[in-house]
Image (cartoon, rainbow, N blue to C red):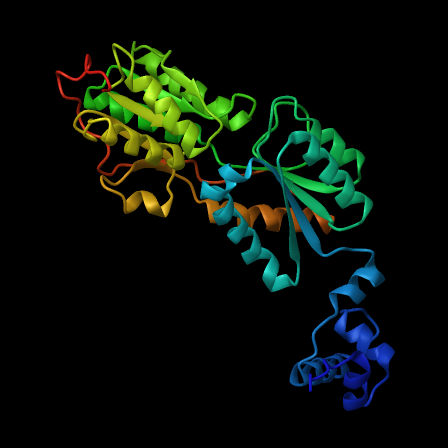
Length: 348
């Protein structure tokens, strides 16, 4: 037989007080003597009473949930280590306070807009985390129009009523390019993310600016959709050039690892013939051979602090933008000085 969860009536009967007094005490409302409140809380704890999220939602007109809508192809999501780590961070903030994350993954930006409308219409969330900011992002105005609270991951390129929580990835990309240039590489390529995404543009701009400062060619850039397959495709294109790069800076670890595989299957030895750097600091990069030189960010902490910031916004507290620690370069085995005779080698 399933044991019934204790109710407010059970707590009231055991504590010898009215249901109304128990409700006031458990919801931390005024009008309850300190000693009585303490006794009620002790009884509730001993009985294993837990608040009903449904009842709380009905009584407060709150969903006690945050929303995260991700418009990416499932093939990208299944291999991208960023969002699992980010979501884990969000959950570490929500679980202790009895809140939930409503996650929606859609395959197009049009479907993403529809998801926000449905979340607002059905009152399923109290606020949303806006990720993968895009140029002239229409979601900023939409979410504001729908009356949802929000925080943005990064700063939009237009005015926004929502606080932003950001990690500056530019120092990490700049450090990766400078590291390769200092090793002696002169033909350095970039396998970039989608140009419609602001962080993809930032990383490409940071890549190009360092090369220009060093007087090096900054045109070896191939745009991708962030998938391993597209990273592999971009790597094959670059290695087939008559004057191929001796180093490649990838916009995420997934593409860097795919590129490393393509290079070695094509007869190039990493890092002797080709140096490779990634971006994400994913755990798997430490365990492949050679281990991946990469740019690291505290993704899980980003998720935790984003959720905490949004909860403060929902509670009506003043919430300023938050700048987290910038991305940093982690040097491992996949980068080394170039071989003097590799600049004219082509992929078989």
